[in-house]
Image 1: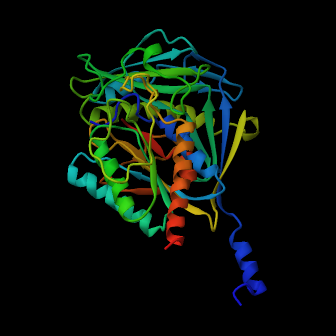
Image 2: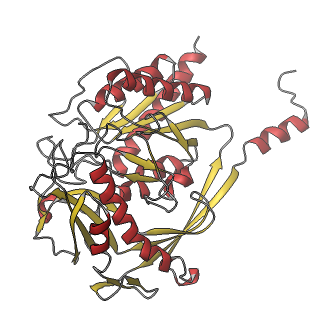
Image 3: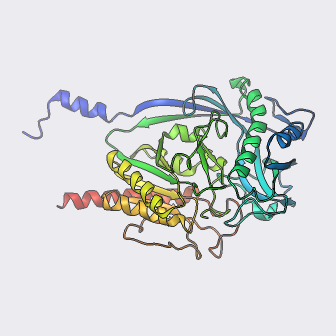
Length: 269
Length: 161
């Protein structure tokens, strides 16, 4: 009798194998074709970005561990120049509809922010190897986590108070002000008309019943000082509102594929 | 200690992570989610968080796990323990880790045969070049293929019982 499955059971088996769609995330990219200095931070839907240093004095005045900040616009290929150790490379993305992991996100392509750090005595903001030197030798382009050959880089270079490059509040402050700088672009990017995007990607969290259940585990930094990882910020790849994995006891945290794709992690190392 | 410039994963990396896309695109697999686990400083804590991760995987009835790390050196203690904790629970595990010539595992156990070395530098060292020794799509495809093989081997073993 074992091969005589009742029809309704067969139907159930067939249905069970159908993919179940849990939620959708749409990421719309807006490509920047030129980046130049100007009076105020600005970004336009037709690909022009203006960078200003006007916020920097206020950051330095406000943050006790920060002594100086400089911004440079690095043109594609113009990498024969000094860089302090690279703390992070950050995409400019913002939530337009819904929460992280669903709805609509706008992101910028063609330009990425590079956060670098050193203290007033020239001690680099790192202790297990650092990447200061000539940028063309210290940055491997075209990886998932690095800019491509044709991308602009906005160098956000922070000089911390003596010894603060190795103490947790120092790098955290650098990330915080860099995030505030990026936020000015996010506010404008939010208002871009979606249909003007240069790329549109649609992602679905799905269940595939009956298939091998696989879990990805990502071991991230949480040792302390500059070795920290933040999750759950208000904005994609942001700092504000985020929680430190150190403060969460480094315990395993479960996230959905779409949350991950939407920039739920800020790498603080 | 733990993360060198060439292995560190930037915020941009996490935004465009190749491992997620490789696993999510495979219609033979049901990707349940991603666990983010830290690397504490204290040894006892290292063993704790990895063990809690394995308990999660077991409770979720995971058929397999791919474990990645963006550091080397003392973070291998965390990494190898998590592999072991998954292994002793009978969950096939493969992964991505930087070894090269300078960073072979500082501790070893019986569950590390599915780990892909993501070294890209010629001499297998920490080059201090940001992004150089990061995982790329090919590494992820290897780890995924190896996991599928391990899960199949486990099924066959169970059938032969």
